[in-house]
Image (tube, rainbow, N blue to C red; front, side, top):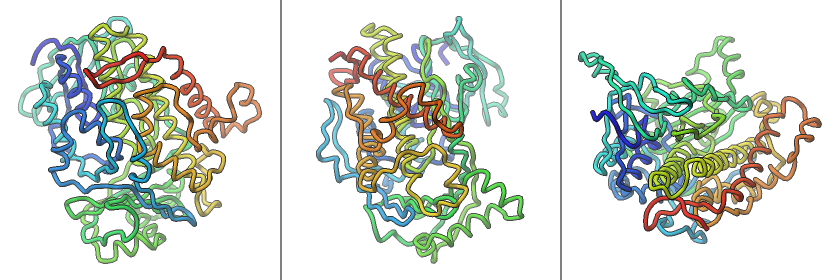
Amino acid sequence: MDQSTQVLVIGGGPAGSTAATLLAREGFDVTLMEKEVFPRYHIGESLLASCVPILELIGVREKVEAYGFQVKRGGYFYWGNEEWDLAFGNKFQERTFGDGFAEYDYGFQVVRENFDQLLLEHAKSQGVKVREGVEVKRLIFDGDRPRSAIWSPAGQNAQNGGTQEQEISFDFLIDASGRAGVMTTRYLHARRHHQSFKNIAAWGYWRGAKKLSVGPEGGILICSVADGWFWGIPLHDGRYSVGLINHRDTFNAKRKEGASTDQLYHEAIRECSVLTDLLAPAELVTPLRVEQDYSYTSERFVGPGYFLAGDAACFLDPLLSTGVHLATYSALLAAASLSSILRSEVDEKEAGEVYEQTYRQAYLRLLLIVASLYRRYDGQDSYFWQAQRLTLHDCSAEDLKQAFINVASGIEDLRDSQATLDFALDAASQAATKEFRTKEDLNSTPPEDNELVQARMQFFHSAMMRRDIRGLYVVTKPQLGLARQ
């Protein structure tokens, strides 16, 4: 391996492979290190329509379509006493993006080990120096700026005798190391878990399930139950991904009473009539997997010489399937910012401000939309629902449909990063930000709702800051970078 590179990317998931590919296509020297050897299992199978323009931008959309993944044109919500048909195509035809982005009214339901490997192999084909099976053991700093990485073989490579540590220096670092979060967990110590979303996910894969008879083609099913909610995702290989979300305290209390994870999972399925019907002829063909406390954010997304991208920076409750969107979107922002820095078009501090405010605004907006949806539920006496303290003023079902299409689809973020920085707050976000704009408001709010107040204030602040970053926005032609209005 080379002993130096312009940009080191840690992590080969969608964030890392997308950022590395974009930078390599701009002619920069990029090295990507991934601890695992792909393919490797990963959850997060439902892709929003916003991912498709970015797949097109890195030149991999046709490869993804040719693979045969299930096309996803939206979702169907059985939420409380209401049913929502949310089709991506309803509003996209009215949308226009800047040069370099096409319009798409679909996403994909993917098997992540296949999808992620496809993106990583594509990165190799675009000139990225990809090294799988190597682990970054530690970073070497010059003050607050990371300057080099100490790495060694991992997994099977280490077992085969390759244990010697080596060093690679770099000009800039993109930390796309996922939940491991090399920078934020080892050095910044800046990760904060959301107290409002202390949830547990338990999921498995079924074979032989019926097709959902309502909703858009290949749509994700979201179904609320008394103590949580389910996702249902049809995959191209004939399996059906079914996951249960419970609040951690509810889940653990039932476990202490003697219930197993499998019992809780199957009992909850019986509460959801639509899911019970879909799975009647099906068989659970995998053991259940469990994950908890997965909603978090870092106190900062950028710093001297580094960018945090994807799950390394933040992760949101899976209700709106925003994981891959935030990964690829942050990768686009990081690559555009770094391209302009490396070409001396924008100074590093200014580009970092653009990245911080744009990415954080996108995350907070989605966080508030998720909270809005959690407000509209059945079973108000359930502890699960009471525990989701990050709630907003009530929005109508029609407002939430509009918010989902414009915001939760991720398309609104692409529009923000393009032609203008003066965006109009959507209906649900207006409800979230029209109050609590000053510190004095904290004094009149119950302590348990302070996270709500802070999220509202941060979102409003990010919205205002976006207007103050001297008119910088992302462009893709004639080259990727930041430009001024």
